[in-house]
Length: 528
Image (cartoon, rainbow, N blue to C red; front, side, top):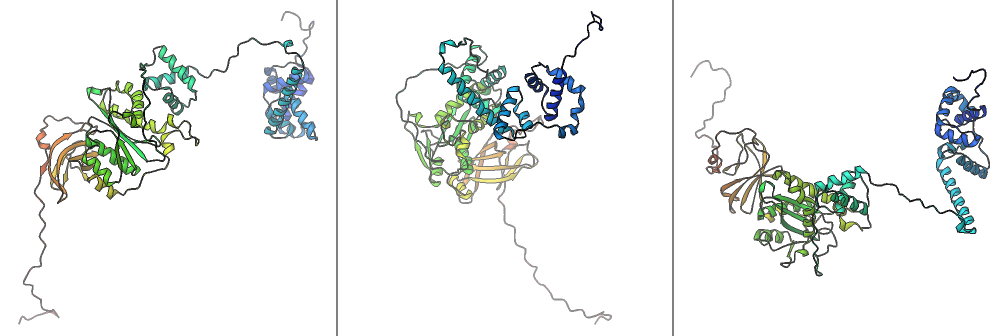
């Protein structure tokens, strides 16, 4: 705008030979990008091109888009195989990608990559040989710092922080497994430790003081050579008390794969909890060879011994004062690190029970530290256990072993069910609902969806195979209560009611004095 156009005529920016070369390669390789063409044609013609210039030229000379030019304009492919490989290298040096070279020379992309890899190796060997022939002090040594690619960003740090807040005292191995399963984040052991240390140093994650204790060499628990050779059972009380109530965690651990076969979190630690846990595990997994426990009263009871004796299960109790001989103690340590921080912040018992189920689910499906060196690449307890089961046992034998009676009953409109001649209350919030009534160890229990509703003290008549007396109802906390509040709730109306014994119905007998009628052969007009 400062000078007249007639006085200083402007020359075109792009020479004609560059435009012809651009259109020629675009017709031969229509899928080549603008940046690739600018780089390659600039190296071939020694005229620098910008990718925006290439884009504007292709929009101006748009005839390359027609398919007629694609069939008539082809890149000359050398017939000699060695010349073709040299052409691959020449096009690569100009700046064409492997896909474009494969299109120009009509061969597969993997072939291009294979020969270019061999060419790079040969060039590197020649450079190394030439450098070895010369003195090393002639070459400049770079003093620039070597920064590797950053593996951790704020997203990874935030994900680790969330897991540390949820599982407050978990170690690096558990956090690494949770990152892999929940966020698909692959980090090394050292990186996970550094990130966790950073979160603790910034007071964002809880830190549990470590107590260093010197211990002598001890004999550990027995080593299992195959699945279901040893199982371990024990009860642990929680340090945290949701709603101010003491809770007890009961676990049954398989020794070979470290799989938790069954577990429960209850307010009591009586024999009924142990037998129920034992029954559920046996019904699902079958019988094991040996069970190891401590000297608790539940495990020294006659009912527990009778079950093991009838199912041919060997019961071993380790020496008193040697809890390290029970493998489940290590699992309780994992449970304390993973769960105590969260249980301290639970607002209800139901929330604590739900988190206990979540811990068992995560333990069976996440990687276990004991399986990190297996050759079959199986790391999780359920992967190691696979399809293995214990010794098969039928339902009748299992019921006889537990001296267990079970009934399927349906509640009436007020939540009562009948067991023989007894009428007992279950739950008013479940009208006309099928529930499971079970009896063992002197207790009559009503369950719905594996949730204990109520419990009664029961005396059993072994001769007639029915309850002799039912008393002392003990309702349990559950989520199936009636949403409608009652103005007056007389508890004595829910006591067990014993009905009259059922009398057999008398058999119907044919009436006596039957008389055979005369055979009618026609109308009888006159009565004789």
